[in-house]
Amino acid sequence: MAEAGRLTATAGRPRRGLLHPVTALRVGIIVAVLATWQLLSASGLLYRDVVPSLAAIALALYVTLSDPSFYFHLATTGYEIGIALAIGGVSGLAVGIALGASKLMAKAYEAYLYYLGPTPKIIFFPVMIMWFGVGAGSKVAMGAISCFFPIALNVAAGMREIDPVLIRVGASFRANTWQMVTKIYLPAMRYPVINGLRIGLGVALIGTLLAETKLSNRGIGFLVIQAYSLFNMPQMYSLLIVLFVISIGANALIGRLGGLHDIKRS
Amino acid sequence: MNSFAAPARSGLLTRLLPAALGIGSIAVLIGLVEALIRLGLINRFIVPMPSEIFLAFPRIVVEENVLSRFTLTISEAFSASILVAAFGIAGGVLLHRFTLLRQATETWVAAIAAAPLVLIYPLYLVIFGRSATTIVMMGFTAGVAPTVLKTLEGLSGTRRVLINVGRSFNLTPSQQFWKILFPAALPTIFVGLRLGLIFALINIVGVEFLINFGGLGQLINELSERYDLAGTYAAICFVVLVSICVFVLMERLERWLRPGD
Image (cartoon, rainbow over all chains, first blue to last red; front, side, top):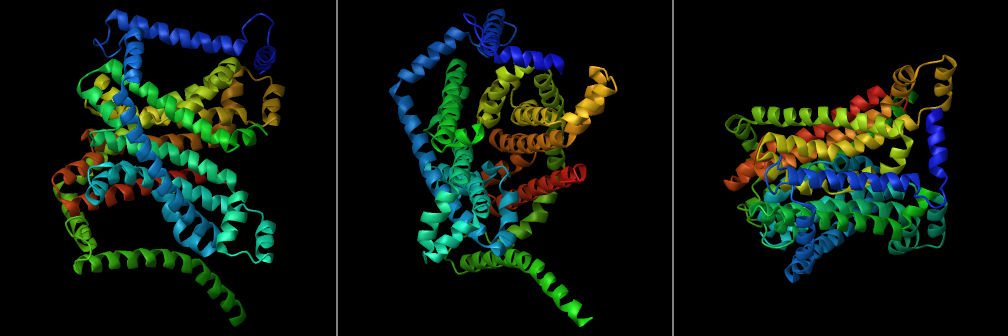
């Protein structure tokens, strides 16, 4: 532990003219991973193209990003996820408020949501195809049922944490249900709602993209599975890089815009 | 006697009413769907009657070898969980032991835990082929990051007084770890393992469905491709029930492990 303490003290003191040890280690890890990748690619130990060279991946990334059709597929996936998040978000919000506002409702139904929440949603895809067709509808439905559960559960939990004084203030002003929701409940449980949306976006993205990989002719999921079918590995890597950057970026953006970052720091 | 009986009765009613309301609502919903299909208001070629789904259960259990599929999925989940436990706990211990490494990589591990990792399954298909290895590796990939983070949280959260007790006994670093840190962190590590295993199971069933290989996930895919509607719905209900049973079991195990909470 003493060693750990010394390390922390050293790590916490930036040295003038030198890289911060944490930054230096990060750079070192990235360089080591990239060098190992490049060596593995050149060695021929793995099947050709399974580990393409860094230059090939960079070129594929450039080709992908400069191809106008990529933006059409990106827009398709973005549209599907946006609609899914709107449907799943609004219904999750309504159900969460209903569960959070009534103890009876919460005891009667919340357990079902709690246990259904973590089940693998992609298995509902055949049903969604039958209900909404093979087009965007089934993908939107997959995204919507994926994000409904975390949003509803977060909102219900957030409702229960609202200061009762605020609710009494609303009641003393004779606020109606709509006014209570918009003036008291939503502002008071801003953080749980945004956290639910953040988690909901992640799972909506997974639900929509997995559905696209299973049965679709447009969208980023379709491009990934097409790259697999054509064994175009550099393109697959480039698409996965873009996908992870977008998903991690969107996650961080929602957290930052919603002030979650400040909560964590405080 | 009567004065005690009345509150007891009302307490029982308070406990039973929500459960009855929940189960009753589901029963009413199922009855309503059955009636609407029989009346022709819902197309029976899109939504099969709940009674047909119920009757399809024994058929899929016998004809589709549900037991062997279930065993296969559980064995894949078990293999993935061994990998998750071994690499997840070792990773957490490593990050706890080397503070600089932790400072450099903890946010990366957290980002990996939040990333949609299941989307790399086509990559695993190329590397490992359409096989059980792909499914197990996908489960492992999904479950390892949360286990690393929770192990780290558990080890870092060990009470100072316990560490000082170890020091006062002049324990070696190895003894300090096995006698103090690890036992104190075990409940939190188990939370991480539970999370990791849930992620692994979700991804295993999902990938089985997507690549049409393996156990329960493949069953749903096969039945839907055969357009066996009642069978597909029954298989989905079966998978949901299995998932719920596993989650409840894990939760009970966790509560048993941390009775004080």
